[in-house]
Every structure is written in C-alpha cells, then in structure tokens.
Image (tube, rainbow, N blue to C red):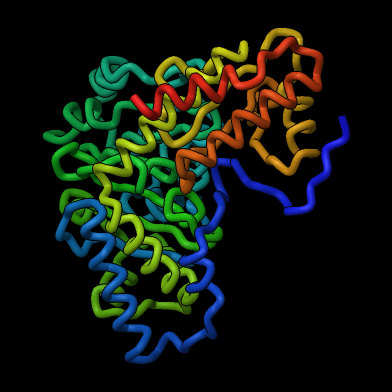
Amino acid sequence: MKFYNFKGERVFTPGPVEIPDRIREALSKQIIHHRTKEFTEAFLKTRELFKKLISNPSENFVFFASSGTGAMEASVQNFFKAGDKVVAVVGGKFGERWAELGRCWGLDVIELSIEWGKSVDPEAVEDVIKKHPDVKGILLQMSESSTGAYHDVKAIGEITKNKDILLVVDAITALGVYNIKPYEWGIDVIVGGSQKAFMLPPGLSILWFSEKAERKLNNRAYYFSVKKEVEKQKEGQTAYTPAITLILALKEALEIMLEVGIEELERKYSKMAEGVRRALEELGCKVFPENPVISLTAALPPVGIEADKLRKVLLSMGIRLAGGQGKVKGKIFRISHMGMDYLDMVQAISSIELALKELGKKIQFGKGVGTYLNVIYS
C-alpha cells in the first residue's frame, strides 16, 4: 500500500519530543537581552516554578546552555576530584556515558555492569560499597532511555543517604515524568534536559544538588562551574550568555506542567505506558525491559519482523519511532510517552498495526487500539 503523508512527520521519539503550541509560541517571540530587568524577572520566575515541580525550596540548582550530557559532565567535574573512586551502573548507552565521563576527568571508575534491559539490584550496589569502602559516588540513570529500564534510585538512596557517598542521578527522561522528591529519596545530584518531558528543543540542561553535594563543590570546571553559576543564578543572571529563548520557553513549559500537577502527570504517564505495552503485546511484540520506565516503551517486534524495517514503514506514514542503541541497535524500537496525550498513542498504535500488516503479519485491525483504550479508560 502506498502511504501519502501531506502533514509532515510526527515525532514519537524519546527526545526530542513534540513541542506544544503554547511553547512554540513562546519560542517564536523576539529575543530579549539577558542583562536586563526583563530577563532577570522571567529567570527568577522560572526558578520558582522549577522548585515547585520538585517540591523543594532549595536554591541549589543551575541551568546550563548545553544538552543533558553537559550537566552530566558538570556533575563529574564539580563534585569529584581526580582519583576519587565512583561506581557507574552500566546497563545501557547512558550508563556507559557515566563511566566514560568519569574516566575522562580522572576518576577511578568501578563499572557495575548489568545485562542491557535489566534493572540494577540495590543489593548489588550495596555489595560494591562494602567491597570498596572508599567509594565517593554512585552514578546511574533513573530512566535508562536506551533500553527503557528503570533503576530504583529511591532504594539506592536509602543505602547512600547516611554515608559519605554522593548519589548522582541522570533523570533526563525522568524529571517531569515522575514525582521525584530528592531530599526524601536521598538523591544528591539530579541531571535533566530540555528536550524530554519539558517539551522544549535541545540545548538547556538542569543540575540540582543537595546540601551534602554542596560541601563537595570544587573549582575544576570553568564554563560548567556550578559554584560560579549558582551564585549568579540565585540573583536572576548567569555567568555566561544563557540559552535565553529556551529559558523563557521553560517558564511556559513549567506553567503547563504545574497546571496539570506532577502527581497527575505521573499517573497519566503510568496509565499511558501500561496501555501501550498491553497493546503491543496483543500485536505480538514483547516489552524489552523487565522493569520498564513510564517515560517510554521499548519493545521487540513480532518474531520474523525486523525492528528497523518496521520503523522504516512507519516513517513512510509520517510516524517516527526511535531504534535501539549500542548492544540493542536494530533489535528494539522505542516509543516516547513524554509530551504526549492519550489520543496521540492511538495514532501510534494504529500506525503500528498498519505497518505490521504491510510487513506480512496477520493483523486484526483495532485489536491493539482497543486494548490500549480499555486500559486508559479503566
């Protein structure tokens, strides 16, 4: 069947995600100068909104003009010194990135490797700490988006919170999805990125840190200096030229998210994730991770169908899904829930039904969609 796409591409990838009209309108406005009262007021308002998102009054957070990886690097630079021993949980592409960043900045990295698609056992983390009592940090993802696996940072925080160990969490595909409570959970550093649940273009990262982490701050970084930036940003300015338009659009994004409420957002994403996974299973797919996140779904296609061929057919319809990375490249496909509404997933699932039919699988049209709708309506 020939698919005609006159409306352009719809993006169902786990970053960048589609941008709502209200945020696109904010992005389209004329630029303002950052060394002005106008920017300062907007920036301070944005900071207040972010504090509400994580239900935390602390001023210990900064925005960088970078992708999320920039804030990951800043975490390594600012809170550890060369020779410090850290544990990097490696169960996906971004766990590998923690290990690479640590070595780049002279840390003594112990890799706690797990099978891709698996979640780290908190007891395994505790065992490594017992074997290496001089460990200074645990680096891991809350949402390993390359595989769709969830790591229980709350349970790991219970292990580290009363120790001289910093729990550093890449929450790039978790912040704005889960109701994260850093103080209660024992998280010391949180990293976020603009192009995920914040529904913005790439180019803005977020780094939040605890009082315990504050005591570890050093001066190893220049552009990514947390110490330098946090003092400026508390006053509504930045040490260097900020991503002005993205910050102004983040203000709009946070207002949208807080209008819904983070508890309700988490509930929506949970329901959406359950519906999508049940629908895909009805269509012969298999959810890939054993303990999946709610920000996206990663799945294996039905037996006999290649993931990348499925994605190619979908793209011909104007539907872009993400593929696998690293060890699961070409094996899985990934559908983002971030920034999506319930009905967006109806389009994604119905398109997958059509694509599977096109690839020769016997499909009862509506079976996946019906399953999904029954879940979200329950």
